[in-house]
Length: 454
Image (cartoon, rainbow, N blue to C red; front, top):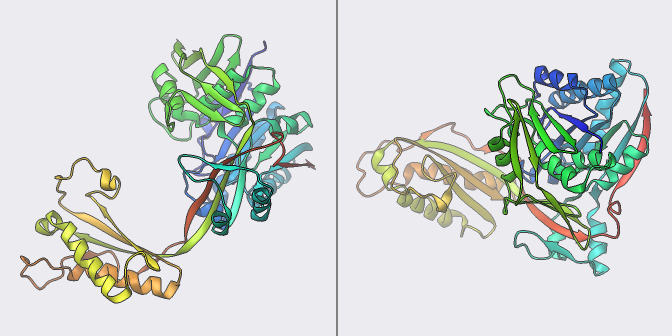
């Protein structure tokens, strides 16, 4: 078995520019591929539903430029997963434009570029339901139905390794992917080099977030993955970072319902018997993982749709008595809003996010008796009618001033406002599809086009 090296400069390229010093150290290792993931569902449903990138184009261009120049310098393929976060068709085209601009600016020699599109028209998904295809929900969600699709504005399919392998085999030196499995963009390169599915997909999981697999914690630093006859090795490129058994194991296990399984299109990596071994000061080697094939090949579908307009109002409190009885304050404020606008949940939603008490944990907050010196309250209103949304938010925010407890005798306001205005937010979107569907082939839902750049 040959040895294959992959340099990974960022775990979510474009969110902030990656650090170039450690990247150049990685390039000096003469990797066989330059690969990075550019997307995530962590950013919420708005970017997908609205088809708007959450990251500045200048940051995306920075990362693409350094990666492209290094790949062309080395003469090795570059693969980007989930272009511009969401991996919609518009997002893929944005990255294609940036790559062409960068190539023209630097007068690069011609190279072949592939674009793999993953967006699925909502009407196409409706057609699948009409044809009787099952679209099963994940994490306890109900199967997809017509009502669910009525709330959906945009859908992407999450590709596995096979469309990327086909693009590389078709001569692509740069591959820009629509929405893709994080691990699959790395596994595609390794499977193409005849590595096992176990090593290929485990390496994908270990490498996907770049320096998150190293310690101490540093953002946007480069790591190097090496796969060979003796397993998968992960090495930190920053001089003050190390990939240790603890840091690599922690990364491979996080964000998982079952920390020993990494699900990907076509099966899952079983990490139950993994062995993590420090082989030098900066490198950890992993063995013992295995791949379990699914009997049916399934592709995940992600969908998002607009719910309504959204407005917020920000205020703060520092009165210890008020903070100690804040549940009563919120009850009085909600009662005033309902007297004026009708029941909460009728045609609008009202949420008070109380930072300093339980805004992060909500009802799961374990320390109910903790009393901060001050709190910040964000009044959050969602309503389809923009004017009504603003009016409700104004009253709901100002109601925090007038929600006087019987024991309070002063006439001054009980809240300090951030600004005496309602703040307009981007519209509220929801995840509608978090589902899987069996496909006839791994490439059924994806479209690939080739072009020569330069």
